[in-house]
Every structure is written in C-alpha cells, then in structure tokens.
Amino acid sequence: MSVDARSLQHSPGPARRRPVQQRSQERYGRILDACAGLLDEVGATALTTKEVAQRAQVPIGTLYQFFAGKEDLLAALATRNLDQYLQRLDDRLAGSTAVGPAGFTDLAVEEFVAMKRAVPGFGQVDFGLAGTAVPSGVRNEKHLLDSGVDNNTAVALRLQALGGDLFEAGDPAATTLALRVALEAADAVLKLAFRGDPQGDPALIAECKRLVRGYLAQQLPAR
Image (cartoon, rainbow, N blue to C red; front, side, top):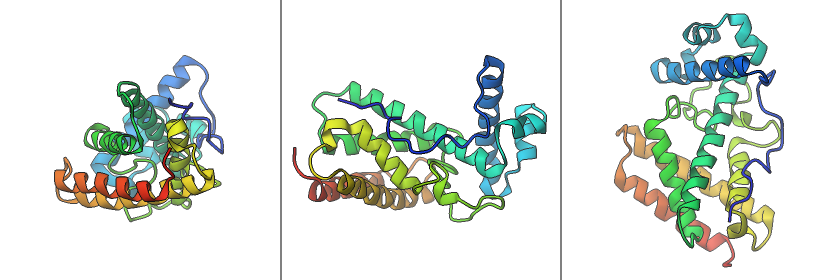
C-alpha cells in the first residue's frame, strides 16, 4: 500500500557534497553519528563542528568537504532521521493488515516515540530542531529538511506519499495541510510527554494518538 517515501522530496539534500566512494560514505556516516552522540551530551546550542570532527576522528577539512557548516550538519542529521523513521514506519505498515488512517496514526506515533527513546540525538534533532533555542550558525531552523517548505510540511508530504491510497481521497493540498496541523499538534503533546519522563509519559502518548486520530477523522474524507 505504500508509495516510495522519497518521491515527494523537493530539494536536494543539505550536504555540500554527497559521498560516492565507500570510504567517503563511511566518513560521512561517522560524522553524523558523532554529531548525534554529541547532541545528547551538550545540546544543539553548544555543538561545534570542531568537536564533531574530533569525535568522528576526521580532519575538520574533511567535515567541511561534506558540510558547509553547523546548519548543514544538523540538516543532514534531520534528513537521515526522517529517512530512517519512514523506513521503520513502512516496515511496520508492511507487517500490519488492513491498516486504516487510525492505525496509520497509531503506528506513526509509536515509531516516533520508539526513536525518541532509542536513537542518539533524536531528542535534540528529530526532523528539525526539537528545542526552542536556535543555535548560533543556524539561520534556517524551520527549513532544515527543505529550503522551500517548513520542516513539518516536508514531513507531511513524505507521510502522505508513504500512506498512499489512505490519503488519496479529496484534495491533496487539503490533506497535506491536515497532516501538517496534525504534526504540529502531535509535536507539542509529545514534547510535553518527554519533558519530565525520558521514556515519555504513557498517558500523554495515548492522548497524542487520540487527539491526532480524532482530528484527522474530521478533516480527511472517508475512503
């Protein structure tokens, strides 16, 4: 039932140069891994490209071959997080039978929560900057995923593509808007759920599902 989750990306990735050779790909991944680990330790505001390069054990010049600066680095991590999230969600959907919009919503929230609990750096940078403070050197924090649209619109478009026939009825633009609003609401509730509990308050996570299910049931036409 799924559509290629990458089919609605608007802009090229944030990296200055995409690695082609295996050795470069390994360095690229190691830099992002180092960035994610440091985010959990020092936060996005205190993060520096110098520390990332040191943690990744690469020369700072190598980092700048791939990333123009801190904003590009965080954008690449956000993009990798989204790609990983969509792949994991797609795997969940493939393992479920007769998934409707409500089931899609529950699985989407559950996978986000699972990554927030386990994936390094995800609490700081999920699909954009998760905190309220904007680090120095980051000007386009609302457009880390796509220079043309804000982060939640970019995510909404990818989810719309992944959902395929679940979201085909009605006006596609209205569906994108509804998913964008649902993401904004879910983001606010899940931030509250994780504010005082590193594993997420189960009652608030359940309320997040209920809120998003109810809203989308009202906004999206029945199939």
